[in-house]
Length: 248
Picture 1 (tube, one colour):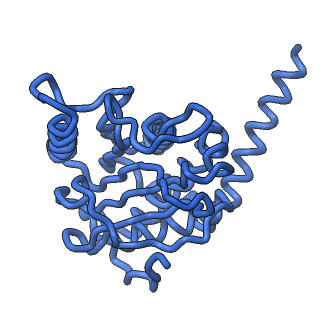
Picture 2 (tube, one colour; picture 1 turned 180 degrees about the vertical axis):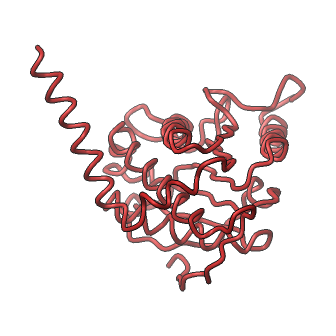
């Protein structure tokens, strides 16, 4: 059985090298910029709210959490301080909620309060998409520039990494989103829609731990490359925003 362990280690190393090669140039230098940075990672939904209902017995809240925990581990290994708004199948509504709507509202408020209390410098909210047409697919990053203009560059860098590392998306970033977490946060932030649970093929991918790892790594590299453009002591990138297009 020893050769199985050796093969497993070799496969893990091969995957790691493949991910690194597809993350783009200057990643090693960018990772150093994560040291001491406070990053809020928000796994969407949880508790009584499963989010989008997917086939094969996997729902959105489960996928969101799996990718978020992977992302948190990567960020912490790079020296970042990570604030997770949930770490299990739960919400932050407490015991005063008197119904599903009230619970969701209190949960959202509590997450924002947690992010603010931690003095997070950036917010990454992780979700999965669902649409009436099963043909829609691909990860997509959304931002709200009404509060933080720097969010657009973060979204653009992350979208590029999602395309490079997953090979499963040709979507463009979009600011067409109404998300309480982004609207109420005082720092740059994005919502990452990992893919479409309404697409049978993508739903199978999203349920796979290997694909969840690739998604987390793509988000991680996007954050690192963005922070590499941030002057010391600030959260505003110093370089101009790259030219992007909205979602078709």
